[in-house]
Image (cartoon, rainbow, N blue to C red; front, side):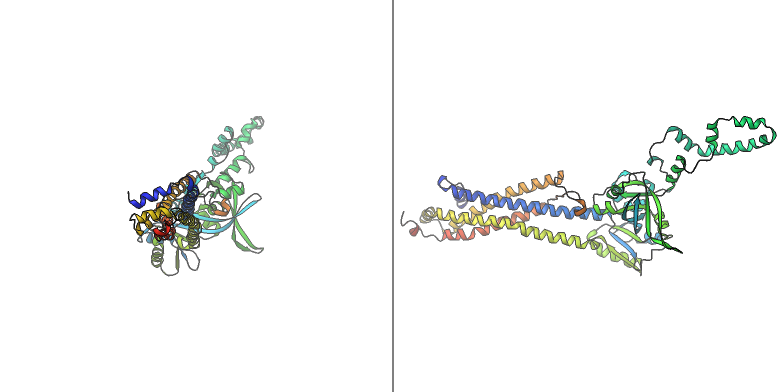
Length: 484
């Protein structure tokens, strides 16, 4: 062990008459540890928010969106999509329609973004359909699916009646055709039919529009829709419910502008964990959206997923050039640039603000070393009279201050990463999703942040030792030992 480090360690072990200096040293170590732990936790929270928002935003939506500058819809979109999907760095493409609508159920209503899409394409560019927690998005793929599995279970007799409705009506028509000549020929046939079982007559009669079977068929014929969890909760809708979707783009009639509307049956509820999506998005089939908005075979947006989001600007420009004149492409990073810039600025401000705790701890180190120099003046004079050089004396107190910084930094790193791990693993801090878009505080500690914080903390501790160590090296042995 080096001579300077050996003496520095001995000085850190305060004797009984130096207890006050020992307390100051302990406070200095605790201050450095508190500053380092606070910085690690704060940076982990900031990084967690950035990663969580970026993953949910970019994972739930497409990386690049292409639309018409005139906003008049994209014609012949299928060959255009196939051609642009072959561009370099483009992984997948999907058509979509976005429109603002009003979704209501009884007296409750919510404004929403209605997205018309084709699931087999949509799953390649976004992850929202994979977050369906209740029901299923499978019916968005096939128009012929029915809603029988989504409705409450019916009595066995009603189910058999519904399943055999068509055959019963066909049998009824055949019986009526056979019985007509007999009615005209004999009166006995009339009396016999008058004594026929009433239950048979009821089963052969056409179903009433108000019957359970007719309601069942009408619900089954409604187009499917998938709602966000928070929107479904606000509407009081569950899987199997019927909601009314009203489009503000109505039709002009002699009575003025009449909005278009259509009834949809809820086949699924998704929960992405991102409040903006869960509270205001809904998915329908592309053909149903085109029919509701009267677009024909037009779409509003072509969405693309790329293999390198860091180069999204260059790739979006490439896609725009390949699409030709009249098209405009934008990417998710540009659309959310204000949010990511705010998080980056917040990270810097957090580092500076909480770093002041380390600065305060450095002042404690400064005070502790100054008091140590005053207390050890005689020891320093004796060492110098025995041949210790000024540089060695200076190094003793530098080593002492740096040891305080290293011990405090190690304790702070252990505490900071332990708290960050617990917070990220157990979601111990809850948030209001209406305000923060997520329902818990995310922690994402990075090793690089710990290295930066450790270097800064030890560096500040080193700077705090410069004056006390210089002051100790300037002590004159004769002056210090004059009155001893």
